[in-house]
Length: 193
View (tube, rainbow, N blue to C red):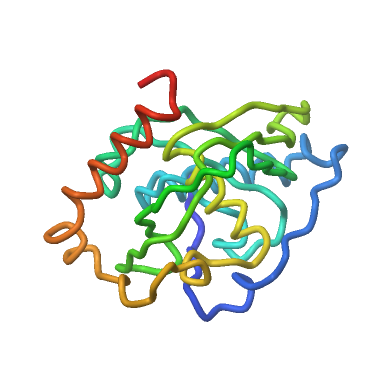
C-alpha cells in the first residue's frame, strides 16, 4: 500500500477544522482507499496515531494503533482503531502529564495535560456507530488525534514551553522518569494493567 506525505507544522491544513464525512460516503472506495493509505502511513512512520489533517486532508478521520512501536516503547499495545467523525467526552476531572510527540512536528516532544478516562463516539470504517471507553495513556493518544481534527497541535497545549525537547534529549533525560508516569497512570486507570 502506498503511503501519503505527512505535512509539518506551519502547513495551513494542520490548523483547519476537519469536516464530517457523510455516513453514506464512509463505505465508498474513495474513503476506504484513503483509510488504507492513512493506516499504511502511520505504520511506516511508526506513529501511535495519525489524523487526516496530517496528510493534507480535512476529513474527520483518525487512526490509532500501537504494536511494538519503537518511537513509544513504553506505550501499551492497542489494536488498530479507525474512527470517523469522532467525539470525545472526558469522564473524570483527573489529568496526567503526558510527554507527547507528533509526526507533524518532527524531533520534538513536550508535556501536555490529558484526561485519563474518556468516552469515544463515532463511526468505524464499516459505517457502524461505535461507542467505547479508553483509559490510561492511550486516552491521551485519542485526544491528541482528535485535537488534530480541530486544528490544534500538542504545542498549543504545552504546560511550559521550556519543557520542549528533541527525541534524543527525551531519550537521555526524561524517558526513564516518564515510564514511571506511564506505569502509574496505567495502574490507576486501566483495569487491563
